[in-house]
Length: 329
Image 1 (cartoon, rainbow, N blue to C red):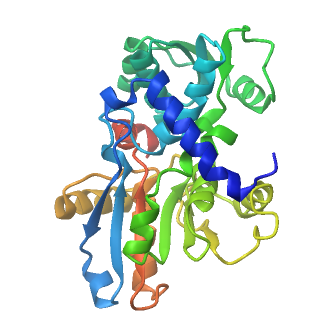
Image 2: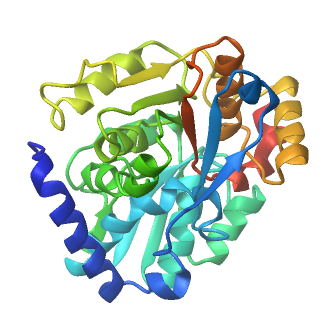
């Protein structure tokens, strides 16, 4: 679709009003503004760089982080259109499916999770057991079948007329629009934010943040996926929203902090996350936000931010995935 900036906020306002009447977001606490916390980093203070953290991780114990923002308008649309079951995709420790299972239980919708790995079962790990207990039906498929289903456009024939299919990671137009609402505009202006830094997987939240953040603020994505192709992909996906700005310098992606690729971790990263928790009192996940925070600290040390910069780090949740750390090393 062609993105028209002047229509974005009225559309969001309309969706938010509908959301509060269709879903129990107030009861769940999901309508509250995200908390912003000042972070004390010795190297940042030495370099005269301020760092704050957008605490999307603590919006809800289970429906946390950017997952809720990517799901909320999808669920609203599904409810309003009379769909009775949500269908989506994920791996053995999927943060997306974890959040979706809890949302569906809260709004009384059926859910089907297509799980990558035919060798798995609902008893394979604590996360799969948890989402099954929430009422999500699980279907385990081979990796080739998974890629085939994820690559389908429209409504795959495998699913019924009452099924609303959400792409892996909530990565569609409604997911991007929802992600654009994560950041409070008043804080960006009030605190003179110069940079916003976030972890990247599918790139849905990154695209949404670029829509929601003023053009004067540089958005930095730390890709958890190996390869330079993520740069080309993001340029292509931003073009419909910013046809004249997709190649401007107000966003950049680092693909050199993935620590071995998607789903990979190592002892140095785990040690960094443990030390961060000991010093700051809240956890990072080892696959996304841990890598992003480690990258931010390295960038500060290298002098990538001029003195006086104020970096807002987006904590996109996903800490529940740390339960699978022994499987990801």
